[in-house]
Amino acid sequence: MASTDNNEVLILGSGTLAEELASSFRRLGYVVRVGSLSGDAALAAGTPALTVVCESAPSEKLAELEATTGTRLVPTVEACEITRNREGIRRTAAEEHGLPTMAYEFADSPGELRTCAERVGYPCVVKPGTSTGGEGQSVVTGPAELDEAWRKASTSGEEGRVGVERYVDFDFECTILAARSIDPETGQLATWFCEPIGTHHEDGHLVEVWQPAPLSADAMDNARSIAARITNAIGVQGIYAIDLFVDGDEVYFSQVSARPTLDGMVTGATQRVNEFDLHARAVLGLPIDVTLTSPGAARFVSAPASHTGLADALAVPETGVEVAGDTVVVRSTGENVAEARERAREAAARLG
Image (cartoon, rainbow, N blue to C red; front, side, top):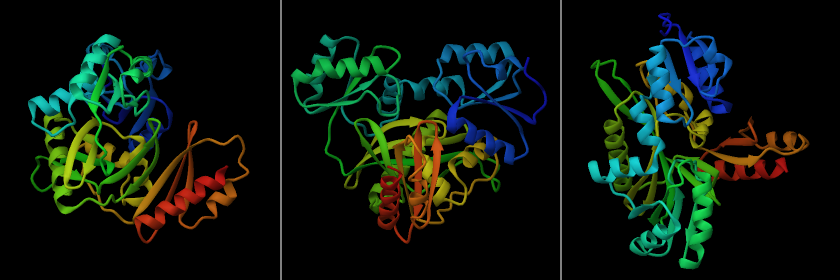
């Protein structure tokens, strides 16, 4: 059985996101270990009463961990399953809760993919069936490109199943961070929304984010309505990253993660409380503060072979550099988003 010591937390994951989250719990006075489901020594040492999932893991393994140790998983096994599987979250959002999404289909073979693409229409986007953070995606303009799109998507995911959705030339992509915790005034669950984060991908990889993103009043209402409905549907405490497409005043749901994500790392420069601290607070049912203190932006670049450009990058005003595994996160603030984005772009270029 799990330890009854409520001062212990296991972060189930690895890498920078897990370590940042561990630091957030430690700042709140908790004893924290970081481990993974792949036989890590942290798991062998025993499982505390609370395990916070910070990685994409098969639901059957999470269920086994919960059953054999008695630990409380956050998010729940059901929430992890829904958010990990692209088809599951799309059907939950569109078919069960009526959220606006792009037209979509799912296929188990190249032949099925051709049929699905014809129904959805060209151009379309082919994606892995499991959430991969943008990797393995292809914009397909005609049937001749489907075989290569199938290869990329089916090898990037874990189940060999791929999704295909209608491509829309939207204005930009956007992420809403929503923290679900206990409202100290009512004692009931409530949801708080961070200012929207604009995101930009190239070849399926996140390269730039900025906060706040310039949504119209109607688009903001639509974005927060979608975020509220999907977080209520999943139901667990914690922070959610809800990915959206913005086209004028229209907003379309894409996917959701029930844990801190790479695009939310910009909050380390822009908010009074960053996404990792928000997640820790929300999981524990503590008060939430989503105050934006400064416009900001972040660039994500491959780690350079040397540190020769570090001094030049840090010389850019209001800029910080953080190495996250094989990715360098360059964060800048400014008087406005445009200035912050330009500073982050310049600092990233100076890294070489």
